[in-house]
Amino acid sequence: MAFIKEETEEVCTSQEGEFVPKQDPDMFMLAPVDEENDQSEDETYQFAFQKHLKTHTDKNPNVGETRHDNNVDEPYFCNMCGTRFADRGALRVHKRTHADEKPCLCKVCGSRFTNSSTLKVHMRKHTGEKPYLCNMCGTSFSDRSALTVHMRTHTGAKPYLCNTCGTRFSDRSALTVHMRTHTGEKPYLCNTCGSRFITNNDLTVHMRTHTGEKPYLCNTCGTRFPRLNVLKVHMRTHTGEKPYLCKTCGTRFRNNSALTVHMRTHTGEKPYLCNTCGTRFRNSSTLTVHMRTHTGEKPYLCNTCGTRFTYLNGLKVHNRKHTGEKPYLCNTCGTKFSLVTSLWGGWLVSSQNSKSH
Image 1: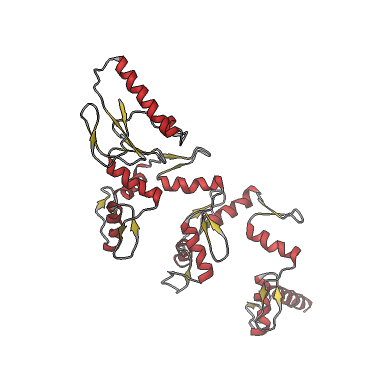
Image 2: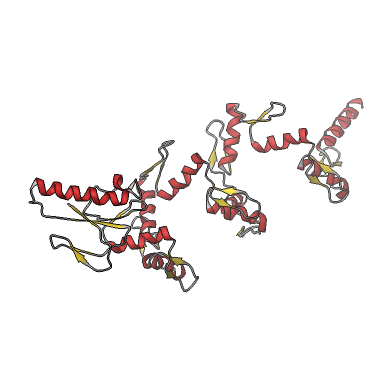
């Protein structure tokens, strides 16, 4: 094989008469030579190839080590990242990803893309076109790669492996996001408060804590939610659905996190530790409330009299003094109480009086 690099803008040919397109300084091509050449001629070409590589390795010592595998099927490669391509045009488009060049403009929304095919796929977001159909379930997709990933939900294929923990994924982007749980990388920054997030979607959801946006509406009761999954869990309060089953005692729950916490009542696990006093708790929210006994924090404010409370339930009970609400009824005498403890106290007094008679 002969290694050919062209510096000029003119189209030229190799020594054997093979057509070789003009190339950029960063593009390289392997052009075939006569396979019947004897060993000495092959050695001559190999020497010329090594000599040529030295012109690059003097500037970039990594080039010669990784790019002389003589892959004729994909003769063009990017000397910035090593990716190979079958034709020169594909390499030119690829190089735009390094230069951040995006010459293709969407006239609808102003987004820019590195090539026309990506723009074509993007335009389907505006037109609603979904030409790629799943023959198994009938779902349509706007691009072929999305269909390919979707098909794995039917086949169960998970070709992307995390070399750190062994978890497998059906698409490369899911693996990329997962790897950040190992590296700690959080590339998405909230410019309002400085918090960082693993995914752009996490950042989008977080921003709603600043904007107050709650785009997901419950059509039954009108309550709005900042996240779709929270709405889905909420809807179960209306439908009564409890899809998560405790296999130990048969109790059912609306969401998986509630089941996880419940399972600790069986296992005795208390993974949340108070670093101040050493007490352990089954869930993080209980630890958060407990910490207020050390910090003295009272985040719940009575808007009527200004009294503050450590617990939300304490505020609710206190508010009954202002509203006069007495939700606890004695079925024996009909008296109402604001506290359940008062109800029990009244019942005991009533019981003792009846015995004395």
